[in-house]
Image (cartoon, rainbow, N blue to C red; front, side, top):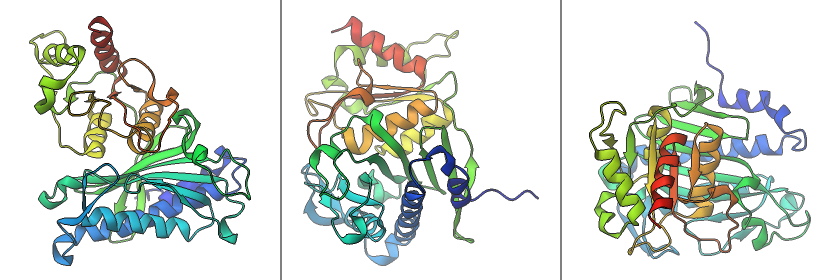
Length: 335
């Protein structure tokens, strides 16, 4: 029986894609893999460990933090800090970025942006959640403290991005700009194995993911697109299927494998959109484009947007190229 390649082996074999990195990026991805294992174990034992429920705090967005939000944030920070590959980290759960200026970090070339536990409102009802990460090379001078501008880079500057999905199985999916690959965790062995090589969005999709409870607040273009996907058209295979969990990682993962579009547009309750450009939209956009899909704010490419603040929100349309372009057509025609 042929043995599957491990994530560690895959990372080492593909170091050639980063001749300038000298192994740092590979080590950084290995640190993310390790932190993901710890968080996975905590999630699997959450009901027994009394870490379900709310922590009693709010994050910078004013959202209630789950206990596992706090735990996952702490695990990723401590794991990444204990290696010398990054000089700073920003998280959706923290108001400001962290500066790592100890001796072991002084020559570090990378920074990490993190959503440590996406979809955490689903934890108490045992629905899939995930971790989203994004890696950039710093633009400030190595040897000096990291600056805010290092974090406010457009998504097209990413050198790696991915997510870990904690579901019926735990899967780490990432890209370094050379395609998208997924690795499933084998808890018996304690390793991630390549299970989804060279992932691509199917050419045609029949799933749409949107919180239709906000329909009344959506722009007219989105309303008309939703009605279009619900219309009967045997040639197009419509109506399409609605699937929405409230966990971006879960909805994105399904749509990338089966074919579909995910939308979180503007609305009265979210006048700039709900998703965060740095922690959610940019990494998912990088993955989308590397898997042959398209990702925009309804009009322009997500990864072209120049961030102006750490917790900036933007409208988000991503998925099969043809489905996103159809949604964009409705947006343009109904401005």
